[in-house]
Length: 583
Image (tube, rainbow, N blue to C red):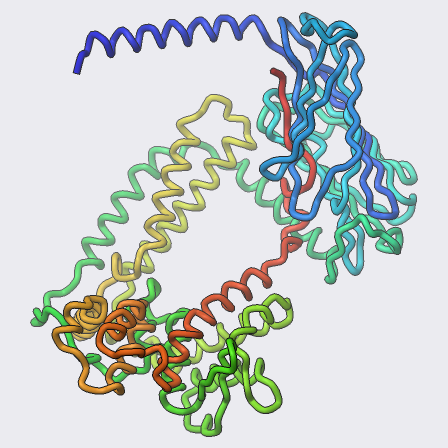
């Protein structure tokens, strides 16, 4: 390496950077005041007028304004005017936001940049699906000032017009940014204190739901909202007050406490006991436990709790035991629920219950259409509830605390989880202190919060057996099942020792599903059994044509079951806001 060249390049870069900094120092601007006028119409439309008073020192091409758009929201009828300059608007929608680029000229012919002047920029637009109409209340949560502005603002003045003057409530957050506010009839007037860069100022208005009897431009949510909104708001305010009481005095303590405590936990509780087992692999399942139990003990990060792989493996096991039968009709995979469920354990009965719930009157379920049915919120909630009951049933029947303690000591896991949750909490606290308490320039506090939070999350997401440990008996079982999984995953090993019958192949496939290596067994089967896809057997048919059915349905159910209105009222979650700057 030519160090002289590297040194020269670094020097040139430093000179260039310094030059740019000096040049840019000649150009600066501030926003003295922001005036907003919001009009909430009974049809759900929000009409917005914004005015920003800029003080420019030096030469500028113009300003820009970015307005975030949540899913379903839209902006129309954008108009821009200015006082003190001649504006030209470029408008684009990208990355979930409306981007307004406003060129400002000092002459009507648009040939001269603005320089050393005061300009008021007026922006006017309509927003749809920003007002939310619940069953019991109409609500608007809107940021009067967003956290993404390049500079702060000296003052925000806002007038908010509502559909009528009765039954309205409003809240402003953070409260300390409010200089004055009042409501007079159907008009709310707000004046803020100065707002520094990176901070937001938010308005929440609750209005009688009767004001929006016909509101095609509002977002409609079929649930009660008032109590939820006020609870979210209260929780946010209480949390913020709690964060603000903490100081950076914890910095040294946290940097020493976490690594020392985690290392000590591992040394005392995480090291595995020595056992007399040194097998390379296992050709047969080491125990006759149900596949969901094997999944819960071996494959899941949380010891003793089965996951969706165990659920799919249970379906395959029930097909093999003729509780379910499988056949193809054209391109659809059909599952029939047969008799005999009385002999099943509780977890298996819940699987049958789930299949029967989605089946027709004849007990036939079209698995190919199941994911579409999970788009229904009712179906999604029901399935999620039953899936949780299935996990509980497996644990209660096979993996009680006494049974689990026989195989696994989770003392270290519990301690490490507590330490990690504490670390994540402190990381969030440090970040919020930096944001809310104006520790300007205290980047060390922010950096420590990020490092501690990220490291704690990493530790929390590790498998239970990192800081916990198996008992001697449990360690032998774990190693045997791991070696069986290794055998299933290694095609060459299976090809060297192929199963002697189709029955063993099916057993392999069932346990491989619970252990998350079914694809490896499938590859080995394709090499050993000609036309296995066409083999007239329910286990094989389900694996090849319906495998991942419940993976996808489970994801669809969780996606459907997550309402985007559940956090309404939480501080900082409002529409509008965004930011802007000058260029």
